[in-house]
Length: 180
Image 1: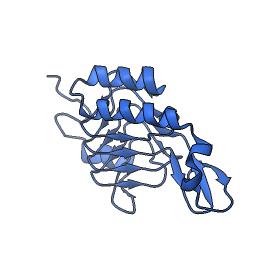
Image 2: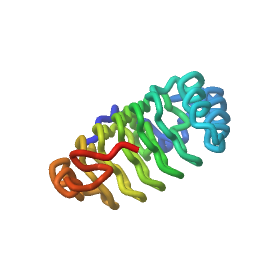
Image 3: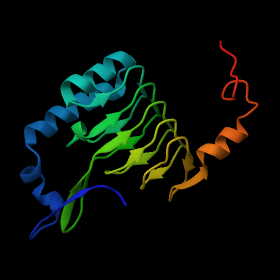
């Protein structure tokens, strides 16, 4: 179960009430910053923009690829660990506007996580350290540390132990990786 806080609305759908839930100028500012960062080829500058202007927690040496779309309304609810890669055109959401309610939830992405291109991460999700999310995955539930997940709906492809066994003799990911 995702960890989201639920807020009911009366009358029109919750998106109709959007500026009662988040200030208009905050959305405008966030949108401009996110759009600038989406096209910025300098990873350190992009991370700095996210930390300073969007109040996100971004670990050192984390790479957020070209065209990644962060939650424009609540980016401060997203945290990404150290040395993580977020693939091209991934979407990370911290809100959902539905018909009778809206939901907010923190997104916690661990250290040394690999998220493949074109993935979508829903609000209230925790992705554990060293996890791998296959390209094109809809992350609708938590991802255990070290697991390899993929698909829509997302499922565990390999557990941490199964992946460790598969990579046991791999020269890069194995037990005794060769240093470059």
